[in-house]
Every structure is written in C-alpha cells, then in structure tokens.
Length: 105
Image (cartoon, rainbow, N blue to C red; front, side, top):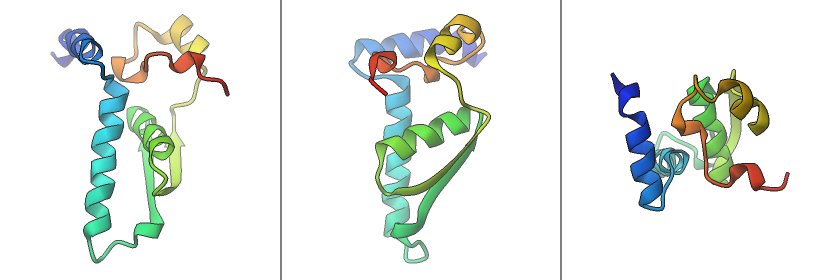
C-alpha cells in the first residue's frame, strides 16, 4: 500500500527543497540529540548499525553527524551507476539524493 504513494511523497519533498534521505538523516540526528541527554549514555560512544534500508540510514547518519563514532552497514553497498542501471525499479526513493552522484569521491 505504501509503495503506491512513495513517488508522491518523494516529489513533495523535492518540491519543498528537501529530500527523503535528508529527512531521514535529520530525524536520526534528533535521536542522537535525545541519546546525548540521557545519563545512561556516553555521548562519546554512540554508534549505529543497519541492515538493507536501515544500513542506508546508518551510512547517511554516520556521514551527517560527527557524534557517530562507529557505523556498521550490512547489505547496502553499491555504486550509483549500478543502482540506477539495475535496481531503480526495485528500490525505494529513500536511496536517491539529488546531485549525490556528482559529489567527488
């Protein structure tokens, strides 16, 4: 059911100047903000782990927030060309960041 509306959500985000990956990273950074307020959390030892779509989120979070000291990405590694050529029909809009493929490595 949700996949029927995924393109509308992505289009709305892009039209507003945002992106789905950007929104996910923003949301996950707010989680780190919360964790850092807890007495039972050492803010110098925050890490993240994810599998598949969660691995995408873990990699976005690790790249967006220096407070993430370690990240484990499982089952989400590819090149943008391979993603577009072979997997564009099967993968979520959450994987597409505007201009990301033009970022120098």
